[in-house]
Length: 109
Picture (cartoon, rainbow, N blue to C red):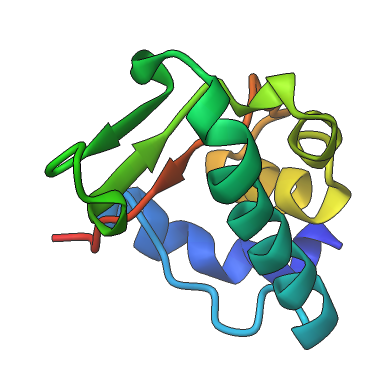
């Protein structure tokens, strides 16, 4: 699987990021979006403030980062998703291991 991702390595090496359009198929993306919505709605309010950062904490729509997500069963398992690992290994050029997923609402640049 990683062979198809190696074409992104030069841009990653030069810019430090890449955009991989269509990386997740529609079903995979829908599942991830639903799980993120569930996490924000049900899990995040029960966690310490250090697990999420907002532009303004009183306005949930300003959520900009979530971390320490492996306490949730879905995201603990998602950290081992083979597609993400293959992409990481192709970009880094060496074996990769995810310490845990994080979510950022920030455009590159």
